[in-house]
Image 1 (tube, helix red, strand yellow):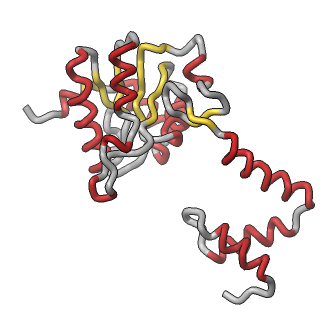
Image 2 (cartoon, rainbow, N blue to C red):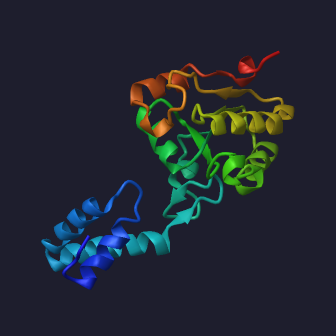
Image 3 (cartoon, rainbow, N blue to C red):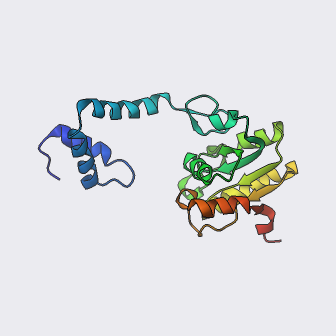
Length: 205
């Protein structure tokens, strides 16, 4: 792609680094910004800079937050004794959008994936075990995607938590195999949470 401006080329190259954004889409986005008022573009840029500089992760559940402890963990109306374990912040948002869950969360920060060099020590698994060991917990819901990595992580978490003698459940598999929570429709995901089942039922005896 030939550019008439080095500034334009640099901006397009940066946008094209975003997932799912090719050079043509990046060019369209950059040209769109060029047609906006200076103040609008400044607000856009400052929002991204502030996001990167000021964003925090909850010290309890590891969800993205403006404060050191997120609003979900501090909300009085949430059931702190029910923990829903998810892969990342996108899954927290997906579950919240169902309006069917009123406990708290634990964000792993990924899934176990030996092919990608991601092991248990790379995720927030030890802090989950510590939460279960040191705070009152009456149920842990494993709400992970129905993928090979998701199932590997499910089994590993079950082995780490089973000795605590608390119910360990998983969302009902109304979501297609290989699907991710963020792409599931709210009704299906909500029903999967409500009709969750003991994880041990899925194990081969």
